[in-house]
Structure formats: structure tokens, C-alpha cells
Length: 347
Image 1 (tube, one colour):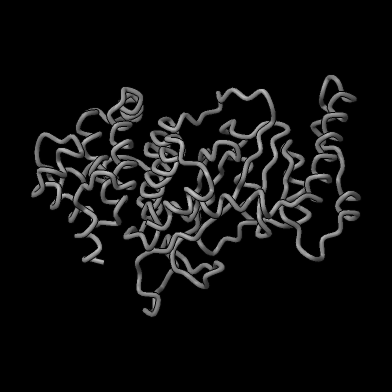
Image 2 (tube, helix red, strand yellow; image 1 turned 90 degrees about the horizontal axis):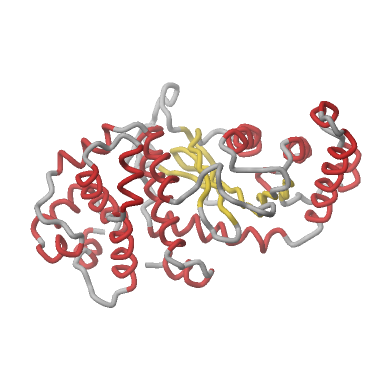
């Protein structure tokens, strides 16, 4: 890994990865980003931008922050590339990361990506909700008492891991990350699904008529019903024993319908919602949701979401926030095609 770091840390003209990083550095210097930093408690905005450049450089090439600072300080070409006029103090980078709350990082990231409840949408959106394992850099063979630890044993398609999980929501049309949530690795996604819906509703990120595509991990007749009651079309990929007839028999009007001033109008809205659910479950949901697997792989393989050197929820949330920021910026720069995303993941 050390050999790889030394080969890729030098700016190379014409290299696609360095070109993308250059555009992201340009974005960090915009007024929009500086205003987002100021709104979220970063008093010294210019210093904040400077430190973010170092952290993002480290994440981009899977470097330790201390090594990234060392390389920046001894390479004039690297400082010119990052638009830095002076050397960087390592302690100031760590202080920046520890000083601010995880919520501030979240708000900053989604402010830069222009994600808010005020998003203008004329039509219902198609959203994709999925989760990924966040494995921590811990020895899995060592005996541990996890009773009071934020990290737990979890299971993914790759096997058992020690760490946490991250739920992420993206817009199918733009691939923009809209939301993510870090939670214990030993909590199944079907159990946390109602909590996620409540969070999304409270933040104004889902509206009546939105459809959410999810994999089989979210499967459950109860979760179909919960989704409809929140006013969304929960297009969870069914398992083999799924019965559409059974689901139809379980669906009924939410009690909120009868509190409406126009009950018949609300009934009609929900019947339309149920009809979209039934029709949607007959479609090819696997092909629609496959894009999020590439999005998650981009975050893991290209933007340092593998084996994090973090051991608390707050520190993991901060690192995930910056990875989500890089993912969102990459898509905003226009790199949205499936083949392009897959290529970026293989850097």
C-alpha cells in the first residue's frame, strides 16, 4: 500500500483522477462552499477550506492524513495543485476534525450538495434506498467485549465484519445523495426501515407519491404497509414466497385519511398509490436499483469507505459525510453514466 501511495501522490497532467480532483478543489473554493462552512460554525472559512483540501486529498488516494500533510509540505507541485500558499500544520487538521459535531458535517455536506426540504419537484421522485457495511480497521480475531462499544459484529454478502452500517438514499434521475444514516452493524435493515422513513419525512426528503426502490433486506409485508402509510410507494424486491394477493388483502386506508376534510379525495389518492405499488412490484426492480451498487462501490473503492480508522459513531459519520460529499460532487460534475462510475471505482 505504501508503494501505491508514493506512485499516485504526485500531480499528473492528463490523468483523469487528478483532473476530477482539480475540479473538486475548484468547487471547494467557491462562495457557495464558503457560505456553507460559515453557516455551520466554521469561523475561519479560508482555513476550513484549506484543511478540507488536505482531508479530501487523503481520502482520494487512501492516504493517512499525516502522510498527506507530509507530502504536501515537502512537494511544492502538490501545494500549487491544491492552491495552498503555505505548509500545513498537522495538529490543525486533527483539531478541525475533532472540534465540530457530526451534525455540523452532515449539514455542511448536504448544504453544498443543495439537498433540502425546499427542493422543487413538480412530479413524484424515484428514489433508491440501500445500505452498506462500514468495516473498521480492527483485528477480527481478537476477543472483544462489545457491550459498551459503538461498533458491533454485522453480516453482509461478503461475510461477517466488525463495524457499523450506513443507510444511503439517492435520487434515481440525478444520482444525488439525499440522505445517509449510520447505525449499529447488528441491526437488520428491515427493523430500521420505519425509523429511516420517519427521518426522511421529518426532513422533507420524501413526499406523497415518491417511490423508493429497495433490495430484499427491507422485505416484509409490514414494511410495505408502513411505506404506504407514509405516502410513498415502497418498491421492495419481493422474496420467492411473496404473495401479491396476500399483500392486497392487508392493505387498508390509513387513519389519517378519515381526519381529512375531503375523505373521498384522500381515499382516491391512496388507491392510486396502492395501484402504483402493485404495478411496480410486477416490474424489473433489480435492474433499476443496480445503479446504487455502483454508487456505493464508488464510495468504498475510490473515496475511502473501506476499513475506516475510526472507532466512534461521530468520527465515522464525519468520514462518511466527506465520502458522500465526494460522491455528490463527482455526479454534479457530470460523471453519472454507469460505465463511467464503474471505471472511477476501479482507480
